[in-house]
Image (cartoon, rainbow, N blue to C red; front, side, top):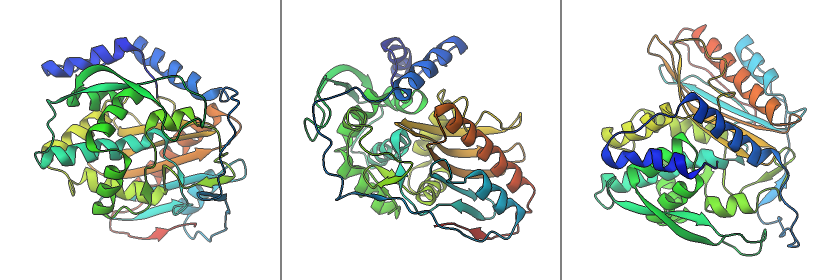
Length: 349
């Protein structure tokens, strides 16, 4: 979720219409920084953790009966024994879906950036904003955890909205994301757009600076924090609609999906085990004891699948990443083995 200024400047070439893909070395450095930030426990702070009763509750897992080998395999891979795992996938050819804990909220972390960018693009479609407009990066100012409702930030370098979108999606840049969030009117505006699309299972409560500063107050492996959360099914449905062009113009849809196709974070997650020739248009998320990856998997045969995978616990981030990769491959293989005419839904709630 964090990047260096050199990557911001490289991506700012979007101002000239020439986006530069990172070298393998740059992508590796970015991933190392990305991982290091969220594999350490939050720094000690004299501030007390605020009461969580209004928005947090113990997670309750339930058992469900799965009738097909495909559903049984996904349920086994998404076992909650070492921490909650939420999965939802939709075959965009047939509408067939499969889900595990599909209606349980999970921390969105940086997967929320899909909704933030989509909100900006919707306003651009309405003529209220432009991709050529420039907005300042929102740079966090050091502050103690929970010391304020909103983490303090200062204005940084101004970059075009096109460049900010590229940074937010491809490199999971927090400062760029908060710039876009401020431009659209904050979390309330994003929630308003989500309600318009009918995605009631997704909510945004804080900017990224505040989310990161106060991370670690809740263990998502055993507790549901409804703030800044999405159910896997709601995210999969959001991705389906965006990919199919339901809520954005074709040009705005292409901006978002193009950026997701260039995502360089999460090389050990969704795309790690997919066969050659299969493409992932995706967005990762990482917070304390939580890793996620959501997006569209496109097969060489033209079939596409919306996938949302949220993993908590599992004994550490490498294990969470591995679980995401394994589940993504199992989803792809399972859908490929089933004729597109078959439509069936399984879910564990």
